[in-house]
Figure 1 (cartoon, rainbow, N blue to C red):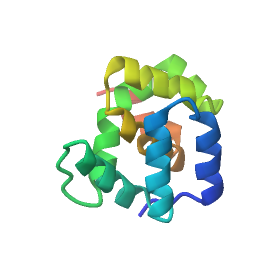
Figure 2: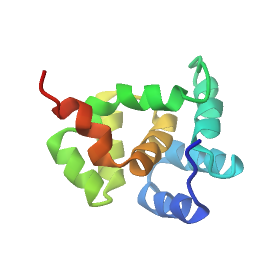
Figure 3: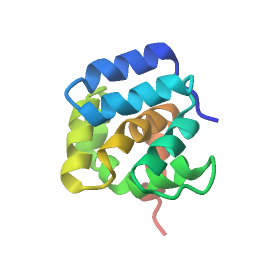
Length: 123
């Protein structure tokens, strides 16, 4: 289970204040007492996704990995510019807007370096 604190939710609320769907997602995360997986399941069902269990968020975030791990976005991510990252995800149509906040929070908890590491491995 990946949990975020109410303080982290408040920080994201400030960073993503311009994104109505992100704010709605943050309300759901708060209602789920910071449990990102539970909140992501609720939000996914709301947008017509068919999540298959608590690990669904991990798999979904991996689908966004290529976009999130672009060199310039990774820098923005490391500098806490989550609004810039959200803009990019929305422009690229990588994930439904309402799932952007849980994905970004998941990546923060996992660590951007660890999250992007599989793309850096050379076969």
